[in-house]
Image (cartoon, rainbow, N blue to C red; front, side, top):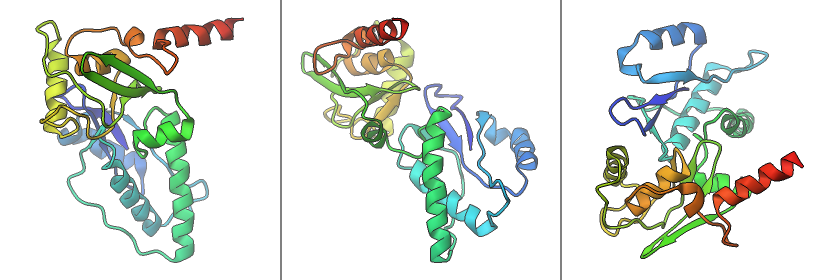
Length: 235
């Protein structure tokens, strides 16, 4: 997996998913490929005892691309569609276990590529936070990489002139990608922002401190909960 950012839309995460017999050789090829100039980080999975065949690898590549396409946080830069390998039932079972292990390891490396944000919330029992102001009501949770706004959250209709051009472009981009509906301005998919403040600013349409506007079910802000955790760790 080659991870990076869209040059024209810096808030957009980009990933390329591929397979190779020789990873070093393939990385050198990608480094020379101008169409893949976006990537700044590479993550590779292999087999300790070289028992992964070409069929196994093709099966995993297909599974990864299929799963990643359901995650709206990343844009998949692959030009060609992967093909699913026909494997014996026992081999499929082994590769499904391998794939499940990849889904566990990748978030530890900073990428929730193979899981939907809602799946991460359920798995890790993360704390819900709400943002409510006027007609705007949004729900989300904090991650290691930023802040996920959940499907069904509302956006304000208006945008203040004080909102930065970057956030204005991001909001327009999310509408273009149908992550936010053009009519009603509702999130139709979960989306991970780079920070709680970025999520809040796009939602309300003006600059706002995400650490103080997102509140849990007991009315405590994200900032208060973070300070409480820090205080407990010190004591």
